[in-house]
Amino acid sequence: MQSECSIPENWFEVATGFKQGDVNAPLLFTVYIDTIVRVFLPSIRHLGVKWSYKIDGHIRECRKPDTSSLSWIFMYADDIALVAESDQVLQQALTFIDDTFIQRGMEISVRKTQIMRLASTASVAPQEVAVLDPVGFHLRGHILEEVDSFKYLGSI
Image 1 (cartoon, rainbow, N blue to C red):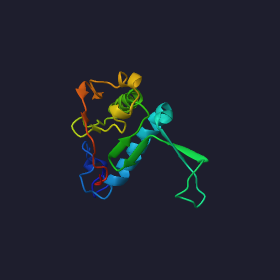
Image 2 (image 1 turned 180 degrees about the vertical axis):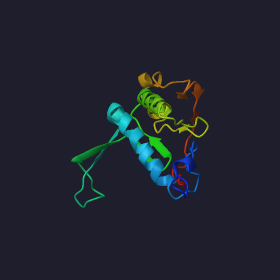
Image 3 (image 1 turned 45 degrees about the vertical axis):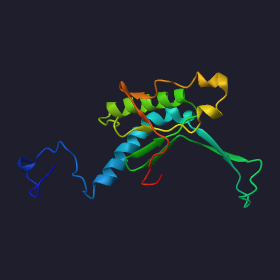
Image 4 (image 1 turned 120 degrees about the vertical axis):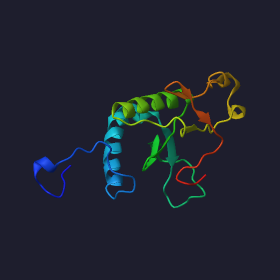
């Protein structure tokens, strides 16, 4: 980084990045996180949940949806939510994304990461109950907390 004086002897190295609250920090983080997402996007793009819908002005009578999209990651600033069709797929995506972050100098917080399953064992067919992982989800050898609800962007 360069000081007010443009003489090279007055340059100094910055090893910690921008301070929290710096006006440049959000832009720098956005560029950085976008670069990381572009690395793992092709590998896990197919792992999301398919949403089917119809846009015809009849919201209450949405029969025979004709449009669909695949959602697998929701991001806002440093909050990230992943969705997947199964436990195994979510664990694969989580591990792959974590490895990608670590390779680029970032780390997913084990303490802040929570798992929420939307399907209860009561709504799962008996032959599928054995597929649910009794140990739970893990990240770098740590078991992740499972919750019934969580706040995303300040909302439940």
